[in-house]
Structures are given as structure tokens and as C-alpha cells.
Image (tube, rainbow, N blue to C red; front, side):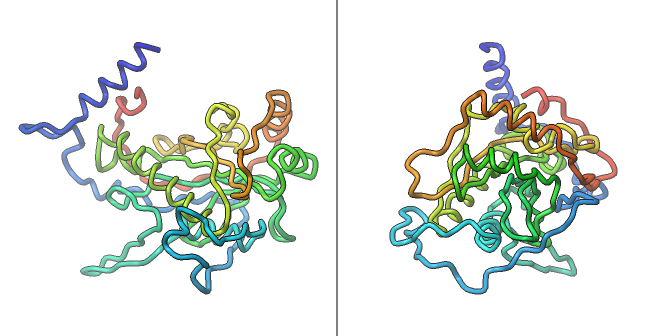
Amino acid sequence: MVKRFERVIEYHEITKHHPHRYARSSGVMDWSSEPAPFRSYKGARLIKLPRLETDPAGGHMSLYTRDGISAAPLTLSTVAKFLELSMGLSAWKSFNGATWPLRVNPSSGNLHPTEMQLVLPTLDKDLKGGVYHYAPYFHSLEERAVSGVNLEAGLRENLGEGSFIAALTSIYWRETWKYGERSFRYINLNGGHAMAAMAFSAALLGWRVSYLGASLLRNDAERLMGLDVVPWKESEAEELESVFIVHSAGDELAPVWLPGEMDDIIEGFSSLDFIGEPNTLSETHYPWPTIDEV
């Protein structure tokens, strides 16, 4: 553990900018390999989400206090609001013939390496309980796997009614393409922005976002969301960053699984048929082994 800690500190020292030199990067902006800004899963069913028609109730301080905001029921519409106000598109900009999107959660260089995967219960006839990827370009959910009645009941029993899992993943290539060795810093910065956006969005619905931390091991979380079986393109995998339970703000403590129950649920999700092949973001890549090490 000491050596691993020292390696992380070494990384931060190596990747600092100095008065007489910059940290290492490719040195040029290779526009031919610029990553596509949106992840999609070819073959996955696309479920369109309703868009906000009016601003949510509550003023600026409601983002922090939740005063006067009752917990909204968990429905397709409220999940759509949570996603639109945390990970959705906020605007399109144009200049000199170029057009590009902006998102609600800030990102270094507007590169947006952060994606969201969700484990949802059945919300209506069009959305069955299962694993989904949020596609902000279409404001839609991509159905990667359907969990079935038994697994959904197990999740409901352990998470509580009106709760679901939201996980943030990072596509490192989106940052290393521009920032080289410093990109690990920006990956974490982007993740923090996304977490804050999730917390603010949840607050406007009377919900809370609770970090699972050690309650869910990384390998188990990857199996739960089928990230371990996706046929990733070289350098374009989604790396799991953090996992959360989204639940009513009235719950003082976030639900936590017991080890035995966790094993059964993970085993069940491991047997699901996950659908969808991730799109190619770039035809060529420049490797940065330092990022993999840290």
C-alpha cells in the first residue's frame, strides 16, 4: 500500500506544470483523432425521456437545503428530470461554421469523459427493471439488460422503495487525447462536477444521492452493470469511478446491502444478457501508460 501511495504522489509531481516546462502531452491537437462527444450502445433499445416543460419548484438555496420540497415519486418522468438537470445538454453553440453542445455538468475543455450507468426498477410499461445507459444527445435511456421480477424484488428489498443505483464511469481517452499525462487530474475534476450536479438535481426532487463507497466492491459493481462483459474498443473503455444510491431525502441513512444478499444479487445480474456494442470514438489512439499505472 505504501508503494502504491508513493506512486500516486509521484504521478502528481511528474504531471505538474513548471515555470520552464509544461507537463507531457502529445504536443499537438490531432483533430483527426478527436473523440466523438457521445457514447452510444449499438443494438440497445432506445427509450425516449420526457423533457422539462417548466422550471422545477424551489429557488437557489433549495439546491442545498431542500426546504419546502417534498420527495417526488419515482417515475419515468422524475428520473428524466434528474438526468436532464444533472447529465443532460444545456445548450448548443456555434462559431465560424462549427457547432458544439454544452452540458449541465461542467467539464474541462468541454470533453466530457463522464458517463452514467443506472440500475432502475420497472417504471412503466415502456421501461422494465434493468441496467441502462443515459444518452444525453437523445435525452434517452439505452436498455442494456432487463433484470426480471426476482432480481428486481431483491433490489427493492435491499434498497428500499423509490430508490435506484446511479454510477459514474469515465472514458479516459476523451481527456488524454488533449491533456496527455495530466488527464487523470481532469478525470477526477470532471467526476466531482458530475457528483455535484447529481446532488443538486436530486435536491430539487426532494431526493438525496448517497455514495456507496466500500459497501460495494469495484468488481461487484462492474458485474452488476455488465461493464465487465462489454466488448470495449482499444483505449475507449468506461472505467468505473463511483456508485451511488438515489433515494428519498427523508431517509436519514442510505440503504446498505449485507454481504450475503449482495452475493446473490451480483450473481443474478452476472447471468443477464447484456445488449449493445459501444460506438467507436476515434480511429487512432495515443497510449499513456502512466495513466493506467496511477
